[in-house]
Image 1 (cartoon, one colour):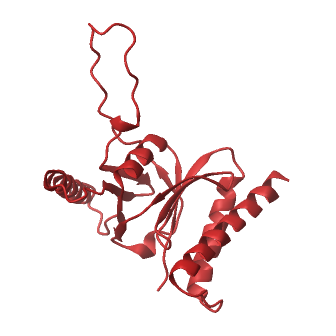
Image 2: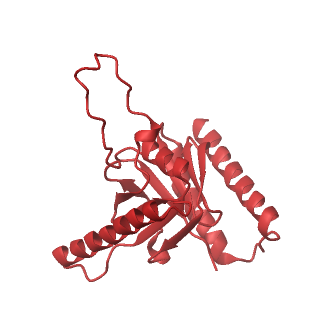
Image 3: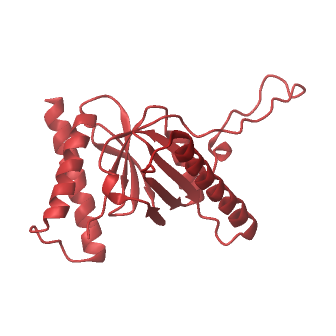
Length: 211
């Protein structure tokens, strides 16, 4: 019974998201779009497997530009993707598991402040951070700098560092085909919220847009 409920919830959520996006942007897509149907079927099959277990997972929907945090097929949180770029969309067609959560710059304990000190909160989360997955996938989450030149400069430096580390790993392993990469730009609040939410081993699915 739980399996059927999870399957129904996933199907309903996918249909509602798809219809909402279509109504706002374009007329409903033709049912003869075999590529879109194949992608939707693949995604549904993968998500049904995840929804039958008591776990939290993420869906990066590049077709509707949202990141969904879900459990049992039910949407728990939604973040908007302002822009994105991918190195090889054709290879983003499997289930990924996060290798480790983003690094947090923990506050230094003040020995003179007593036992009661503020715990780590959402504002302590990083705004720009990489996510590494198994199978190999490199996702770089970037917070919108809102035209702040200093923040933009720091962010560009992190992007270049991430790029250099990725190529260094390629040279070290000798792989001829580099792993796919995905850059996501979101708001500051959404970036920090994502860093707060994700955990080691968390499953991720990617919904790819079709031409």
